[in-house]
Image (cartoon, rainbow, N blue to C red):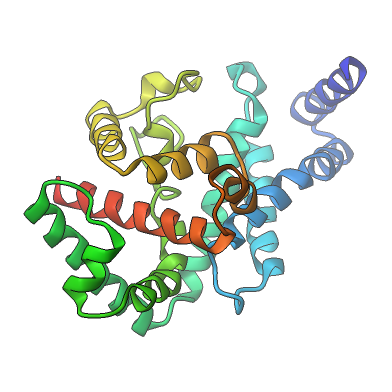
Length: 253
């Protein structure tokens, strides 16, 4: 492992200091698995008509951009730095193709508005039964609606925000309080961080667990299902509802 780390450090030196194109190509090859990992996690939220190869292509350009702009002297792990750019490139690619049907966006607005109305009424996150009753549909129908709009959740907590003109953009999710602060924690917008932390604290226990296991622990939806002893599709519904609630609360604040 130490030898491999030394080899990668040498590649970075050869590319940044010596301007060797071969070293750049080798770095790209070494970090391709990071693109595959991020594209795979993003694809979980997307409808079947979105081609994973498109996500890999978007992410590949993000990786190349990260390699070109990365400064090893800043002592930030490249994986941390590159993940933001790869994810951002994938999201930008998705936005540019406008892959979400208008009917789905409309349905998402209806669900968001209903959840927000019930939150104001109850002073807490509404249950699926309560939202379904308010929409005058069955619980199964409501959960089906949640499944349909889940693709929009990938553009929420993974959205990029800018802190200032001199710093790299960060994910909205990265502003959530964590036991192990990120290296760029001093750049985070404190007000936004507090708002999101409070919003997450007000989620139901299952919703908080799904958010924590998925974003902080890196578990797949299937693995989270095993932890919670529910189906993968149910985990997906819980995740989508949590994202809708967070987006609604942050927009309101």
